[in-house]
Image (cartoon, rainbow, N blue to C red; front, side):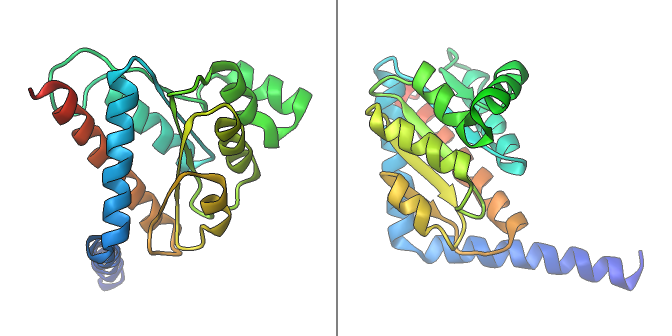
Length: 196
């Protein structure tokens, strides 16, 4: 292995550790994650669903987190209803073509969201117009709204009931923490709904 490659590896791992240490020390953010976990348990325990959406890597994160509920996280159990609004290519291209890309998620939330569901909008920049509009549509319909973003999440804070702002401005580090948060709420949901 070259010295340059070794430095990249070590630096990347250390940066990831530093962001996770900052998460661990942020008592407000830890409390927010716990509250979101409770909202997931309440929604899923009463027959409601989780709706997730984002662009690019955040689209992949939406799908990953949804899969933890529909499949399983760590526990053998019945499947839980979660849907990523990033997977239906006909809806995505049709809505994008007819209503504009900024309405991709809002239209799907309006069609599929019901009061008592939880909508999770994911944007590392905190500024994605279609994610912000999706959260606004969810709020208007009476869904619980959760935003996952990075350090500069002021617009997401205004659009959501819970805004989990990872203390970083680096996209890879933010995404790594979003998946960690997704895994934490998955574990909380399984523990609360099935461990008893």
